[in-house]
Length: 343
Image 1: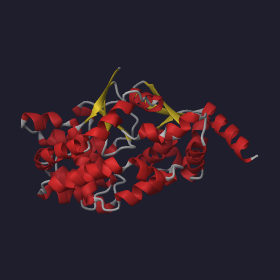
Image 2: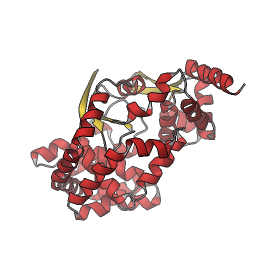
Image 3: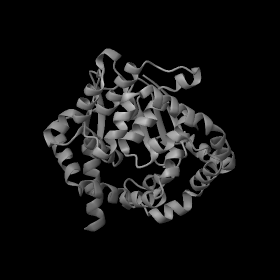
Image 4: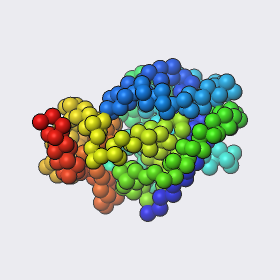
């Protein structure tokens, strides 16, 4: 097990997400809504902490260089497309540095594996164990088995047809915008150093445990462009630099009102409640839960992210699979604190 935590930004990850935000016109409003959905005063938190992010994006937008690939990658792109683009760039960055490209079939297999990944395996398998898509007919047949929205399928079809072409375009898009990224970092250097300083003494045990369960070797970077995200992308992980501020209130007591509200919202969703009830019977991996509840693996992963975040669920690794288990002590504590609050 090897986890390397770097208190620094990853330029590849930051540039892709800055370009995405440049095309995402409602990102501010949606961020505030998301904060409210987790029991945080979104307006207040955004006003207090997001000035650095807004300036970071504004300076990048002023200096960025538009490329033809941008529209393909970011105009009307859905979650599948964005996650796939980020994963492709950070996991294959060595090819950008060397100026070479991997084999088409290798790329296709990796992309297909990412699209069908159920979160059950803790690492990337060998190429021979990934899907094989030798021609367009096999690509179309494969896409029909996924839960990708129809509006995204044309993007996936284009990407899988000639993945080396799009990977080359992706690398070019990143490289030409490196100067814009550097200017954006320089423009927020003072408050960014303060965030790095606070982040150096911050650790989220739940995120570290999740990283340990999902992969044997991972490098975790700080992120300013996704300041509240905690994500694991195979050998790379990302922790938003505003997470220490988001968790400040909940550190003042065992469970704050904000934490209670976040947990209540999780239980207010039928699918999330069904997951907890299913896990009460026994621990399960993602595909088992999907089949038991009739939900797609990607939908299951979405719900599980919220349950992991509020502490109701944790993970265990056994025989190369990641199992989900309920946190009985957290649920009991939640019920106790809720009773104290309302009775």
